[in-house]
Length: 351
Image (cartoon, rainbow, N blue to C red; front, side, top):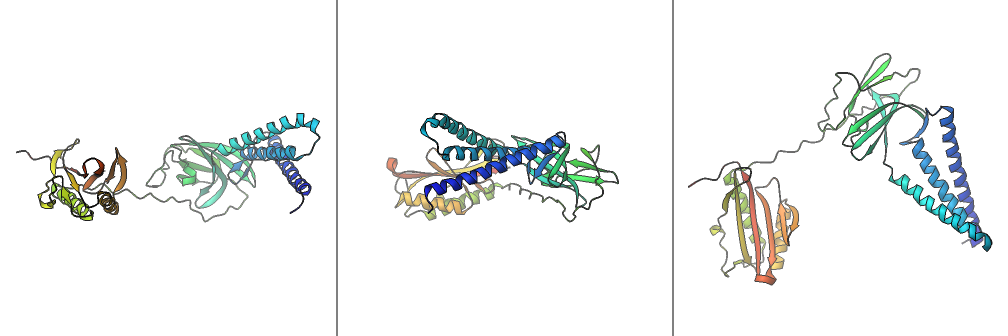
């Protein structure tokens, strides 16, 4: 391992190089802006001039902080150097924090017929708003020529939610403001959202389609008649008690007869009928029985939940819609379980 003085010099040399590079980047960005009268900027990947300047400023402040902390000085100069170190370190953290908090823009080539057009679209989001800038790109230099926008943080060009009609002189562009989950073709009716001049004299790459993939449609929630609901409740009741550590006894200590358990019927709030059954029982090991019953419910495809010391499971698609269980062994020596079915579209029969 090199001595401390040698290591200090190496770190100071690296910090000086980093500071020089950061200053050179900032100077180059300023030169591009001045030469183009503020019209052009640098675009590298998804980072344009402002983001690159923020990154270079953070790097410069870090390098400056390292240099101020490692430069050896006599103690009288510490009265000046220590405050300078504190300010530099605080500025480094502030600059790095602000840069890290910026959103992550995306840059997407604008395509026409599967071929690049010489334009790219940088899109960014803030809260639920999306905004975009269309750049004419020449190497790492880019000139903004148009703007786009979107709702619900939707980036239309990154998603491929746009259409382009090209003629000899112009590119007419339509794009979606909100996400179309079916990925249907974008309509090219009415006035285009953007009109861009065709770039000539250059050969642009072809082969990319920018096609979107439709999101799979969610299957409709199944509907069950009364017979299916009874069968579903009976199946879950039987599977639950079969998983318990036997014997399974009711509150009076009598073995439970599944055939004697009849669900009650009630009217759902939105109409139709609903079945429900509540059960109190004890087993050879209530805690183990509850764990095994919950395992049966999980294996059946129910989603877990918990409320008021009740372990609950629910499903939007199974006949037994909501199931809950609670171990009150320390209170009454019992396990309390309830099963509630989905709603059938058939009303409760009257006597």
